[in-house]
Length: 368
Image (cartoon, rainbow, N blue to C red; front, side, top):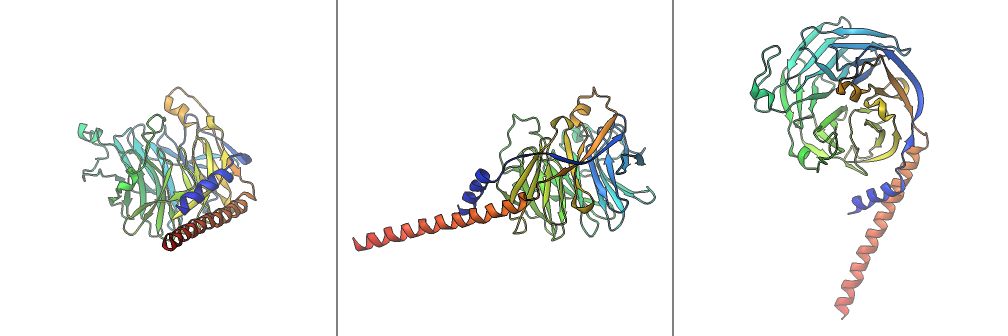
């Protein structure tokens, strides 16, 4: 009761969407790439971008110079790189590969040499595996799967979201895959079937060094906390839903960024993500169709404008795409927690009044 009241109060007082304050804009040329995934690689101080129309991954410099980082001819035609992550300790790139519900895999590449370490087809819930090159059977076609995003822990284990089936795969350092989390919690929230993204479930995923994952779900706007030891899953109590949530990233100060086509959400927690507060929202260029967010040097926040919908429609011939730095108002976070303190204080005060009123009523009954 207290928690719900506090979140309602915060919704009323706190969340006012800001217009994006644009910082560094990186425009790069790669005809018809229509990228969906990207991340920042601090080891080389560049961005890594995965396309949806070509079986290649690019390296983008801060000046917009685009170079092919790797190209994998073993992948099925029309494969897309929907999610990428860098294992910084091992200098390895992990990439989610998806091909029209027929093929899902996780690939690992050595960033120094470009050598592929493994290419693991991701297994289905019934234990069947998908053969890399073999003809896809009708049985596999009707089983929903879409490898969407990936996160990596300190031990090198990768966690991949399935946005069609609402579960998480785990792939260890040797490339062995298993179903890691298939919690009913993922299916416990209402889905609005009238929105375009109602079939897109679990999406962005990020590893938190305290031993858990944070995962967002596009069609419900919810965030989940998943224990990496046992897969235990809980819904994070937020003061509002994250509409059309897509990519997710975490800054070194603990602030989590979630991006959608429409805005970037700034979220913070003071209790290890049992609860969280959206303390800022920054509106984005809807036409650019942002799908991913990453943290660059000095906690800078960048989003990828890959014009994905144009690419999905299949009638685009766009030559250039952009990576844009989004700047927040410096006082928003401090103001947010001031409202949090006020909200909790008011909630406890009202709860105390409620308890006192009950006490007085009980005493009156006894006297009578």
